[in-house]
Image (cartoon, rainbow, N blue to C red; front, side, top):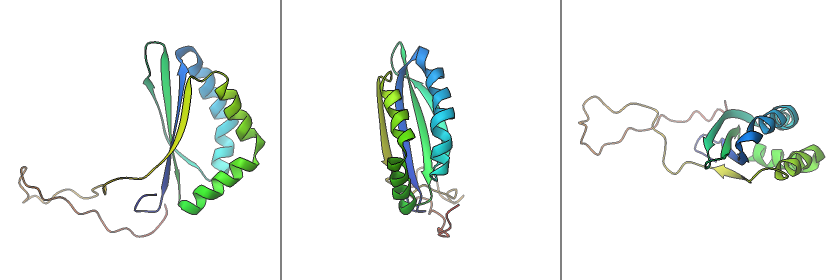
Length: 134
């Protein structure tokens, strides 16, 4: 969980190059609607090379807080279509994983003062959180 209360989830699925489009279609049709219904917000989907003949798909989700995270996990555990989707994925994926993420340092939200020289060790101060879950 980060300072603004949001929980970020990173899913990574490594597939052979010829399976990526098939899996993304299955993800879109079979997994995404339920994930959105469980309160997950899809932030980004990337792909990166994972060797000569493989690609890793990286999916970044956001949930509005820790309670939403645990509610999502409970709802996913009670939905047999979630287990079926991941079991089908395991049938041909080379690897997969899910990680909950939190930042290790605050993310600056303002630019450094114009008076700060490039070699200075001064750091910008993040803007105060409003506590709102956008």
